[in-house]
Length: 543
Image (tube, rainbow, N blue to C red; front, side, top):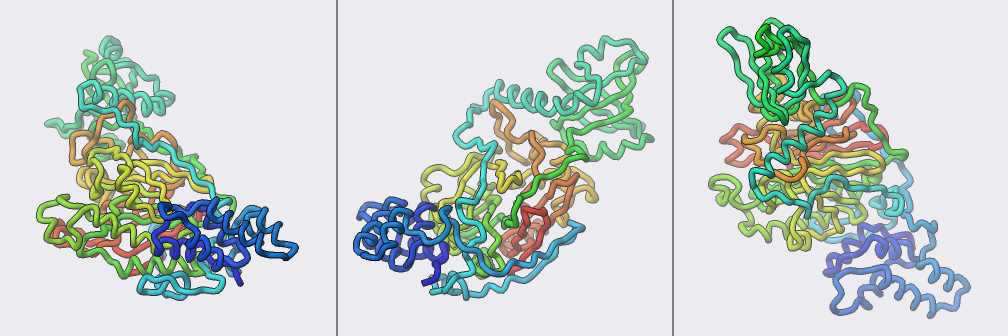
């Protein structure tokens, strides 16, 4: 009997009402007769148990070994019943996938997913019998490497008091300012005021205000912990174009010359925290891939169930054998009351039923994928960012394949490659504030470049993006990521900024009436696939 794919085992268990720990699935998959072991485990499960654990499988394997008189029976029982390597890893499919890469990183290379039901599940969603299923991942659970950083779930301390706002802005200025003070001879605002006219000065501060003068020059007010000081950008200087990129509350450094009365400084240069041009991204030391998706919107009448099913079926095929990670960037469901008259576009009107339906759709993907999810603005969490991960009730509902549920934003390191996951609500604000050539919906990755340049995922406070004050600013991009993944705007786009791969992954929702009213034509049914060993991207299309 060939090895059963872990995906089929998980699918069978979930269809019987059980979840399973990864080690338990691996033990079943590695046994001599995994189909018989699976059935026996289900028969022997305690009535009140909902999760299949390694001890349940070991008990069945030991019982089977005791009934056998063969000389290898005891050895099989001692090793957990496995006939493969001691690591418990799964067998690799025989054919490597030919990966289509895009050296330019500007225009996605798109291939059409077949959505065939020959491996893992039928098109109706029921498990099918497969011999040596191609859904077996090339790397077993024991080979996987996944770490989470900057997850603020359970760490929220903000009360909305004045001191909380002071604290978060001081933290932002200190952390981002530290990246700039080495470039300029920084002086506090109050010290600059006391310096003689004509002095060379430099300051690091938050952008407090940007306004034009009657003569067409630009006046920028910087604020630090001591006070504010005005800086004048002359209209005929070459770097005046940078003024168009400024957002209030971002951290900036300026150098210039004081006026004769020391009341203003004339800007000579301007610096952003930015990603160093010398940044060299990390890559995996083996050929492994991650699927990056967002904005599933289950519960909407426009949720593209057929496209999702084709995507899930494709993940069971040999072509997807190297896809070991699935990163979902928020808006798992459509939500309730998110925008006016949304109830008229809902297929599922109860928020908990929406998550139950999402969980059923999640069951369709292979059970041996590592899944990481963050919330978005349509999800049942607080709207203000940073958004903690879901509460225990919703985590219990979304339990298929034991996903890692973390805050928005969070940094996920997979196979040594760091992925900054941020849902992307602030992209609306960046696109609205900046010139079209620097940020627009058709090229969402360009707006993401601006956030990388500012080293903050939502720099402007008091605009359309709701921000929650905390003891620290969880929205600062402290460490440069290798991949920056967002969603929210329902547009597909990717490119590289100073060697950082920026991807906005589109959505799984066809155009709604609300989107028509705001002129959004979504890119729906796409799945960007990233080769973690090269950071090349292939886009699979399922719509």
